[in-house]
Length: 265
Image (cartoon, rainbow, N blue to C red; front, side, top):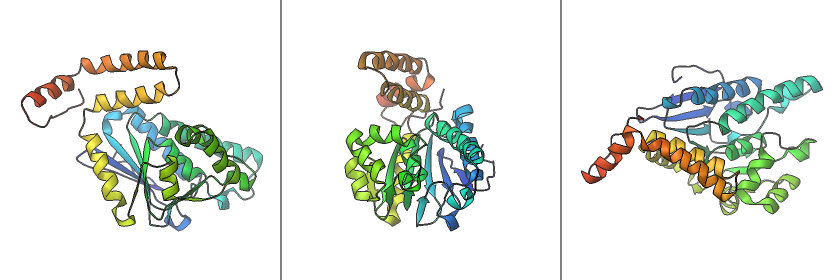
C-alpha cells in the first residue's frame, strides 16, 4: 500500500506506522477532481482491506492556502445530469471508505476547507487546524446541498441548531469558531500544525493497534445506538482485545515499569 503511487495524492508511511495522505493539487487549492475522488476511494479502501499497513493516518493538503476547497467546479462546468451523478457516486464511495476506515484519521487543516473539503474534515475522526484555516459548507450558494455526509456528520459535531446555521447560510467561519463549535479539536500556529498533529498521531500509533481499532469501532457504532445497546457492542469489541498478545504485553510492561512493545497480535 505504501509503495503505491498516486496522481493527485501523496502517501507516506513512516517507521512509526504514522501515515500522511496529502491532497496534491495545490494549483487548484486541492479541489477534488474525478481522479482525486477515485484515488481517495482506493487509498482508504486499501486500509480497510489491510488495516495493519498503518496505525494512524493524517489527512492534509499540499501548500499553505488550501486544505481542500471541495469538488473542482471547473471540471464540473458543462456536466450533464448523468455525468454529475456518476462523478458523485465516486465521491460517495470515497467518503464511505474514509468513514469506514478502521485506522484512525486525523485531519490537519492547513488552509481553506470549503464544501467537500470541510466534509473531509468532518468525516475524519478528529481534526487540528492552523490559525489561518477557514471553513464553510457553501453548497446551498451553488444550487445544491452537502452530499458527502455533511448533513450527518456536522450535527454530530456541533449540534443541530448550529449545523443548520452553517449549512443554510453557507457562510465561512474561522478556525477559532471551528474550535468553539466542535468542528476541530485544537487550533495551532500555522508553522506548528503538522508538528502537533504528527505528535498526537505518534501517540495513537504507539498504543496497541487492535485496541485502538476496536475502541474507534465502539465509539462510532455507539453514537448510532441507545446507551445499553452501545454498551453491548462495546463489550463485543472489548473481548476481542482480551485474547491478544498485546493485552498480555501491556500488563507485563506496566508491572515491569517499561514501555510496551506492541505487535498488533
